[in-house]
Image 1 (cartoon, rainbow, N blue to C red):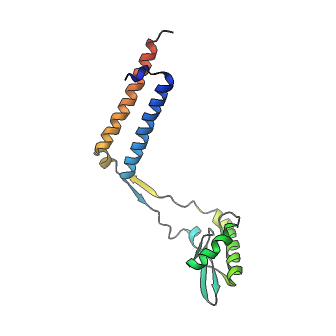
Image 2: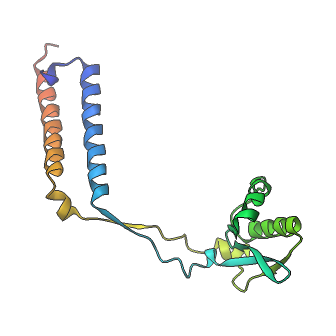
Image 3: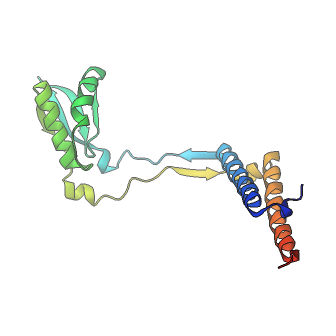
Length: 172
């Protein structure tokens, strides 16, 4: 089949399919040769406890500075519906609303943690570091699939050149 002589719509469709094949294949291959290193968040203030909800000296729920709740499964199921309706922006103000809702639900009291932040402090925190991804390009380039993808890239460039040449030979 002479790709360069295809009608424009078919040529565009073919080239787009070829491009997607190259991109998805390369992405898949890179993924196989990637390692993911999660950042150390142990000292990130935004994830530290904001408050505990306590009943008779026992902690039944912990809310972090973002407003995320940790509790046992039984309470967690009861909280799901209660907290689903709460509106708010992530942070200590929202964590306070959540703590109040939980304390009212279970008849407990709120104990603010020493690591509780104000909303202003929370808003000034640096963003949570992202997971670092490292691709082993040396190993990937020895994979036979890499050579196949590189061949497809060369074909793509060749098809573009042949198409440009074909179009210049058409009568105006």
